Length: 103
Image (cartoon, rainbow, N blue to C red):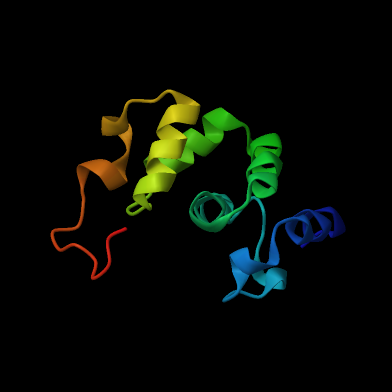
């Protein structure tokens, strides 16, 4: 990982990657992973960072391919991108069983 990437990853909130060593995250290779973590667990500052790095269009395209996404995160990305909710894979292929907690 380059020095610029390491600095960029360290700008994101620490709680986003509690289970992954920061050295193993590459901004280009792991775009989807980073975007999903920020959408589901990130702060507004994290969102501002990734939207500056990737752009709203690319974030929307990545999010449309996610197999799962929290309902609030899905609503947020649909409203920000303006894409129809039916374009999102996580909406059209919902799990058949609801999670034990649904809030």
